[in-house]
Image (cartoon, rainbow, N blue to C red):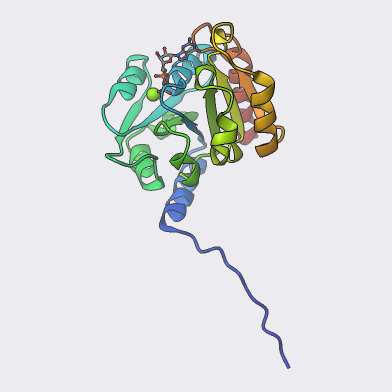
Length: 220
Ligand SMILES: Nc1nc2c(ncn2[C@@H]2O[C@H](COP(=O)(O)OP(=O)(O)O)[C@@H](O)[C@H]2O)c(=O)[nH]1
Ligand SMILES: [Mg+2]
């Protein structure tokens, strides 16, 4: 008697298939890409602008901005001299792979090294949608409070880099860094972490040096 061996295949959703296509396009063009996620006001746009400044020409950046409405963030990136595309999601609380695909088509990909994607600001939906980028980055900021890893575990689990922004506010805002980091460690042990201030520039050197190494490693 023959026994049937169950074959379990991952059935790709339409979004995952589109995310794979985005990744193929990015890889074919030799581009590295980052999905930046955080709550509203944590400093996503500020990180993009400060990263541009700190890179000082070492990488050529393009920007995709995701918001429910307005082109405020893409306008800021464009004013800083970056090729930028704004996605307005209407009511959606996250970017999806089809939206990123449209945005990539509007960027001069062959002139770029790195695409920074600012996802819609919240700590829930973006964690559940792959868009095809290479790296997921979460920005936590000091005024949000030290309990967020405990309250939004899904977001903290799925990222490869954690940026702790607004460290210039540590003297003024109650924030127990040990408590925060213990919460992160349970969800995402050893996650690469950069404490920074986009206001003063503290910590930005370590972040951009790491980023430049990451982009170069992929090319070798
Ligand atoms: N004190 C301080 N404020 C910051 C820092 N980074 C960003 N901000 C401010 O936080 C607010 C929201 O920043 P923004 O980059 O627009 O956040 P986003 O909504 O995540 O894109 C703005 O008023 C920024 O000037 C920082 O490191 N320190
Ligand atoms: Mg923003």
